Image (cartoon, rainbow, N blue to C red; front, side, top):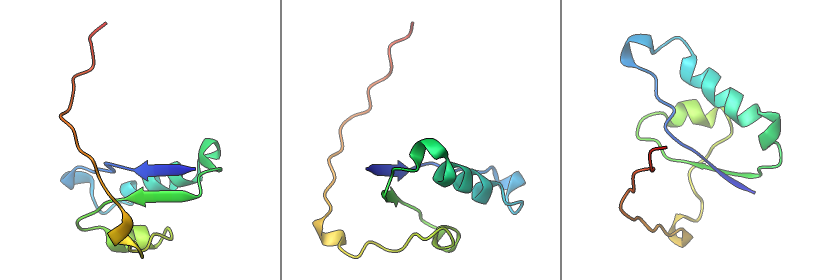
Length: 77
């Protein structure tokens, strides 16, 4: 199973209180996600934070590919 941890954001005024670490720990430790054995994330500046959770740089980044499409708005109900 594969999961992508995305957009763990903490407003600047609230940083330094461990909120991002707590959110990440909760997501990674959630029982509904216990079967996930391959996690991926992207960060510009929090490598040290995620390393504490066992994340490492991609060993085979040259084999990954990406396909991006335009964002489509969800229909309103």
